[in-house]
Structure formats: structure tokens, C-alpha cells
Amino acid sequence: MSIEDRVHNIVNTLENKKGESIEIFDLRQSSYFVDFVVLVSAFVDKHALALLDSLKEDLKPKGEEFLNIEEGSDWIAIDLGDIIIHIFTEGHRRKFNLEEFLCSIQKASQ
Image 1 (cartoon, rainbow, N blue to C red):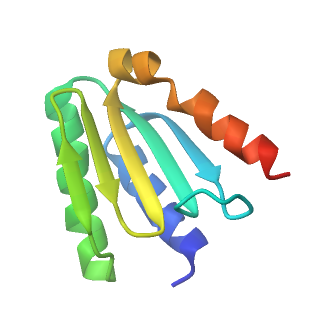
Image 2: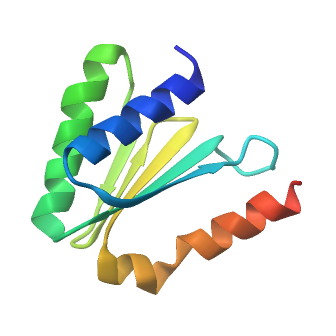
């Protein structure tokens, strides 16, 4: 399965479970440590955990390997090796503003 197909599966799972403001950053042309980063907002921390559970349930049977999962009260980072998924509550997403950082990486590599 191509990395694009894998990202598509991730996004479909997140959309089906009402993840909001999904953004995909293709960093293959940069020197960043992963090829793709997916950001998604959850309503509350329980919704973030539900999104994580859905990702595991949907992606593991398709061969996706979850290398590491870091969980905080308002943020979950999922390491799939060449893809990182960040699940934030909206307040934490605004606070950390990874979009700005990732956009700057994308622009620098073009």
C-alpha cells in the first residue's frame, strides 16, 4: 500500500469518527524526520481517545504498525514511522500551533 493510500485511510477513519479540521502536511521534499504529518482536532479528551481507538481498530488489520503513542490530557501523538498523527483538543491545537511550524518546513523545501 502506498503512503498516499495509508494517509487516505487515516483521514477516512478520522472523518468517520467526527475528527475536525484535519490537515495533512506532505514533507517528503524536506529534511523533516517523517514524510507526512496529520493534524486533527477532537471535541474533548474522551473524543481524542475514541479517535485513537478507531485508528488502531481500522489500521492495524491493514498492516499499520503503531511504533509509539504519547498521550497527554489534551494531546495524543501517534508514530507510524513515516507518518505522525497529532490529535489535539482545539485549545491545545491553538496553543501549540504546529500548522505554522509545519507550513514553514513545507515552504522551505519548495
